[in-house]
Image (cartoon, rainbow, N blue to C red):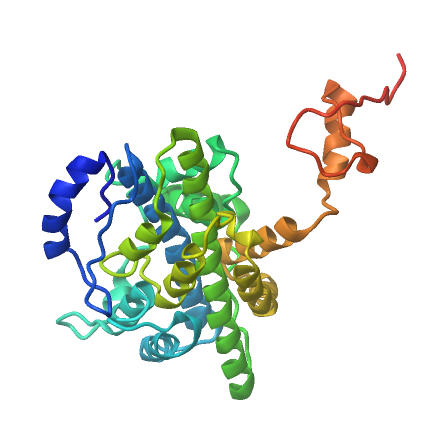
Length: 353
């Protein structure tokens, strides 16, 4: 539960909400005052955007293990269990929620002895049929507020593509076939190494999804003056929600205890260190995935996000020149320093009339 609103009203309803809310591992209720105004609804909406990024990444890991590494459903379930027991995806009270239910999904059989997952169609229709709007709104908000959130938005695009299965079949016919996921053909020792890299890559994408989501919330908070309590938000996310991830929320709780926190978490040295350490594994999985035609939108988007977020020599240097060439959109000079995201002061006549 994620309440927001006037202090007096929250003081009245919070004791009741604390009684019915999920509890964390210490028995504390996972409900708190998110902030004023519509902050509670907004934080819950972005929670669902973060959820999209995490769900897509985990689905990508499942397909890599099942089709790329040739693992059985039980073997995939056992691997998810391993992820939940140790390392960055560990957790108490069912562990990292999505990883935990991933193991359940892989093991579940119907009354005919079939794995239920094996008969589920690859269609996610909730964004198209109107039964879920929060994911759409999260992406719209990211764009409106000028926040790069590729782990989230790319996850949304594959959901949209998946919904139109009949159209995908028509495209497949037009192409004369598909680009099937090919077996990775790794030896057993190499397979263990790849699975560990895959775990680290999933962690990096989960953490990037949190970073992107909090950046969206921060920009909306500045716009609306909600005075969001980020420590309270982290407490809400500790249990009873889809994005439950103990290692990440423990880290965020420590960060938000500090005074005057920079809410762009990519500026935080601890978050940066975690992502930097996971970067080689993420890169390895994306490279192998591309080589073997794995479908990895959120994993690959996260890799690119880390690359361009940390880079001060982007191809947009050329991009800006193009804009100035055909539209006199102006540009900044390297000699002038970083500056703000404002219209540049310079124009060049690239081609005289």
